[in-house]
Length: 276
Image 1: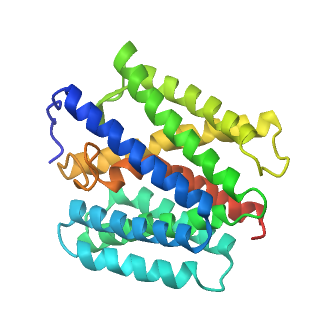
Image 2: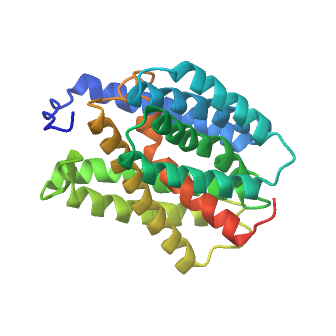
């Protein structure tokens, strides 16, 4: 199960077009519901959390995936629409997700791995809406987070393919290179800073230093999240978490980097005691 995994064949023009089309459609839908905000935004991310939980369990145990997905959706609705402090919920969710991620490589119990997946998924249901609901800066924060992850992913992919060079972690993800990681970090930092400055509603919090530092940190942890999910799939000899997104695999495949940034943001939100 942990042995060498053969390289996948290069993607042809048809598959690349499918990936680009799927990405554009998803990005448009995500941006639309983000601008809308409110309960539609919460519901979308609760449903996303349910799908992620389903895909995680489908990988690690190949059972209980549907009940877990439904359970996460129910829990997400109960918590996200409760009177509990969103900052407290997001901090708790981030801490649980982080502990689950740390524990995942060290446990073999099916039940423990399933619980780690539930904690992983709930981060989407609880942290993302809490960030969107931040007074004055909520929309800017979400768009900034998207920019950091998207710029990082795109630049890492094309920089790595163009420049090549030494592998980043060949035993975890054979295709990722140091050039791609550096290119992704630079693009994520610049993209995050520019979007934060350009999007109205950042409450005047546009000082270059903190925004650049946060963008760089977000880009780096998003790449760590990508590697974490790659190690999970490699451990269980799985190429894609599902086939729900044409040309991309599953939601877990597309949101692994964003999950890591959410955990960082959820912990920061709790530590700073921001009122919502």
